[in-house]
Image (cartoon, rainbow over the protein chains, first blue to last red):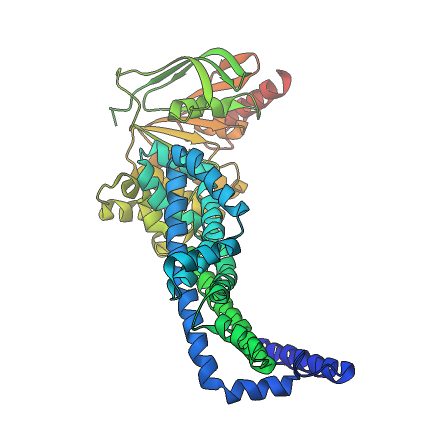
Length: 246
Length: 241
């Protein structure tokens, strides 16, 4: 309850400051529309924004699921195989030197204007944080547990399954919390490069037609959805980690 | 448990070029408690790790043999100072972790009996975070017994517990490990005097065999001969390098 009040309070404060800024600077509406105008644009175009938001969120969710799955599989393979570590890890680090944004035009060229380039963008942008967080967790299993398993004559895969993976769940959870914030960035960039739907597309479209209030409305919806996604993933991760250990 | 073999350890150890101890011979008696007492850093734990087959990073020049001539693999269980319980498993599943790790069927009745023997029946479904330090070591004790191995290696398993609980755990362990070949690493002279059928003091000059009190283990902590032995051990620890 206190938390909800605090969120409402902070939101009101931001809107108020925004309003004051518009009034004091006298910026025209096509540069910075007032909160009231943006609010009107939001409610006036509710169905339109909702439609585009649902497309973006679908891209984000699918990208998040696939990226998490791939990241988990990669981390486990790397942790199991020293050869994979020698071969794949430098490639992964190198791939991070390449800005994911630069890949968006290529992906659009290859995969067209549909959902897939955006999903792949979201996937690519979260793949590294998920993989590296989970991999670090898998490599930091307490030494005593591994000694115990060895004396018990466990096989590497059984140690992975019964000890290393469960022990790395908190590390995976911190990777997922980051991923929840990153994934929408990937999807939006994909939409900017080439799309016919989605909040990123709507923002470009509104910008092009000088409907700055609609652009801001889409931006705010995107921010709110990203915050909700982050909060849900955060809650889910905390719940799973708490359940696991108590 | 007449199938518990004696062990003989021989040799020196080096880790990454640093000598840990010079050549020594350690005889661990069959079906009895052998206590290896020493200050921190003399290499007690290195000996134990080599015995446990955990010496991948240790250069051991020498040999480890069982009196029956068979391999030690699969005949050893280990209990350390840290309980190494899996925080995500409850008491029952922690005790049965060895079976899970090998993919064996879990003997549920046996696990329940062990939970009962270590006095944790009421806590059967609790996870480690909900248990006290003493209770957690009881789970570790039951897990060690669940393995049913004839040789038990103990690496200061009671040293993090308070005096009262430590004394209780020593009695419980002495009762439940009866008949097994036990090697206990400790830095507590009182513990060695209570539990050792055979006592060695390990220091920088090597291993020194000490005559234990004549009464059988587990000995009362306040018996005159136990206290005298404790004093003698402490003096040895303090006076030799």
